[in-house]
Structures are given as structure tokens and as C-alpha cells.
Amino acid sequence: MPAVPSPVIAATGLYVPPHSITNEELVTTFNAYVEEFNTTNAAAIARGEIASLLPSSAEFIEKASGIKSRHVMDKTGILDPSIMRPIIPERPNDEVSILAEMATAAAVDAIKNWGGDPKDLDAVICAASNMQRPYPAMAVEVQNALGLVGFAFDVNVACSSATFGIKTAADFISSGSAKAVLMVNPEICSGHLNFRDRDSHFIFGDVATAVVLTDTTLTSAGWTILGTRLKTQFSNNIRNNFGFLNRAAPEGIGKSDKLFVQEGRKVYREVVPMVTDMILEHARDIGLDPHRLKRLWLHQANINMNEMIGRKVLGREPKPDENVIILDTFANTSSAGSIIAFHTANSDFAAGEKGLICSFGAGYSAGTVFVEKR
Image (cartoon, rainbow, N blue to C red):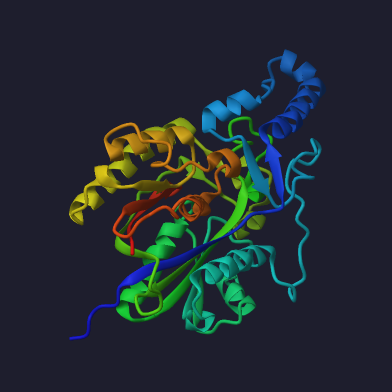
């Protein structure tokens, strides 16, 4: 009986947008909006009809999240108090869409780092929180832009999309359905962020990542996938209600829940134990001691969540290089966060050393991918 093909993470790639916004820049814009709002509505505020808005600060943002800056596709509109959203002009249908362009750039980087033949890529998976259209699938457009053949489709499990994409690609390879798969994660998170909400105006950034997965015949290096596991559990505590049916209910078009909304404290209390238990149970089931992991590449949602999960998984206070944090310069990039962490902090691994790629987010959804350097 033929051996089951073993899936390998052969390489990763990264595309970083051209603009960056510091906390100080973001706060200046937000506070200008708050001052204008409070002045314009002073009489209604005095009568108790509406509440005044509170200003933000760079110190508040960093303490609450660990974020100092974020990359974005457009900063001009975000930093204009009268606009406070990215300005990204619509492109004609015969031009590559902006998400596909970002994903393709990350994919080119990953393919270069792999060093293999792109013609061996049998499938493309686009796994991201927010696709810019329902169809044609973004993955099919990326496939076309790269001149690939085979099949392609989109996956959306919010911030866990990348680990769900890795699991899906690994299963295709293990089953013999594909010898190599490209998985991309283009995220323009600034497009669904309410920059007028003090509790969340600082959270997200934009980026694109890519992962090439192959069977062992197509790469001599890379990372053996020791185990993958996925989990979902319904919750309304992180939600985005934007969709094509909004136009069918016009009374709700302007509501804030058509953008990103969350109950941050509830998310922390519920997600941290859920993810920690999942990691420890998965490690136990595959015979791996989590205390001996060399590195954690966690979803980059909030530094307090990451630090708590790191302590519980490693059984002690993690050293700075054991629990990778890229939140400070990238912010939360949804599905791409754990892949950025992995991409930027794995070059010092020796053969046989192990680590964990882990995601968690809306749904709730979570994914674990244990890997070993080949």
C-alpha cells in the first residue's frame, strides 16, 4: 500500500503596504473628531440627550493592546477627521483587484523563498476575513494573475482563516488531491474598522501573507506539519454584519454593526481558556510536550491575550523570543497575524526543533498547527 504523502510548509511570503500610521497620528485625528462632535452637539449633551465622546491617547492604545503603529493601504482618508476611512478607488473589472494584487505580491515572495516550480502548484486558497466581493473568488483571480492552473477557492473563518487554510491544504496533500498548494491571506482590515469608535479605532492594520505547502518530494527543507486541529464555537462577541443583504434592509445601512464590533472583555475571558485548553489537548494527543516548544507564533490580536496564552502553554513566563509579538508595528492583521509572526521569526531553528502556529478569532474560531523544522 503506497505511503500517505506528508504535507510540509515549504515557505512563506509577506507583502507590507506602503503607508504606516503611528498611535500619535491616529489619536490626533480621533481627538479632532471628538472635539468637533462635542462642540456641535453641546446643547444636546447638556440636556442629557446624547453622551459626550471621550478623547483617546497613544498611552491608552499601547496599554490596551500593545500596538504602537500599523501599516495601511491608504492613510490620507484615515487621518482626515471629516473622512476617517481609507480611500481606495474602485477598479474596473479588467484590472486586477486590490486584494488579489496584495495576495499575488505575497505569493511571489513565498514562491521565491520556496525555490520550486510554480507549475507544481495545483491549488490556490485565499483565506481572509473580508473578501471585497462574493465572486469571482479572490483565489481564482490570484491563480489567474500568477498564471497557474488547477483549482482555487476562498475561505473565511475571520482571524482563524489562515490556519483553516493550512489545514485544508495539508489535507489535500495528504489525500493526494494536490502535490503543492498556495495559501494567501490578503487583509485590508482598515476597510471594516470604525475609526470613530474609541474602543476599537486603533486595532487593525493591512497586510498580505502567503504560504506554500507541498509534499516531501517537492522540497528538501521547510517544516513538517506534526498536527493540525480546528475548532469553532458560536459567539456574537466579535461581529461584522456588512453584506449584500444590507441594501435589502436600507434602514440598517448606517448602523455601526456593519463594521467591526466586539465585546473585548468578554472575548478575553472566553477565548483565552478556550484556546489554551485546545493547544494543550492537541499537544497531548500527538505526544508533544508544550513546555518544550521553542516558539509560539500566535494570532496577533492583543498583547494581553498573547502573553496569558503564552504563560499557560509554556508553563512559565515566556522569554521575549519564545512568544513572538509583531503587534507593535503591524497591529491586528486578522488572519495574517500568526503567519507574519512565523515568517519573521523562524530562521534560527535547527532541524528537529518545534513550534506552534495558532489562530483565534470571531466565530469563535481557533486553529493549531504544530510544526517541526526539517
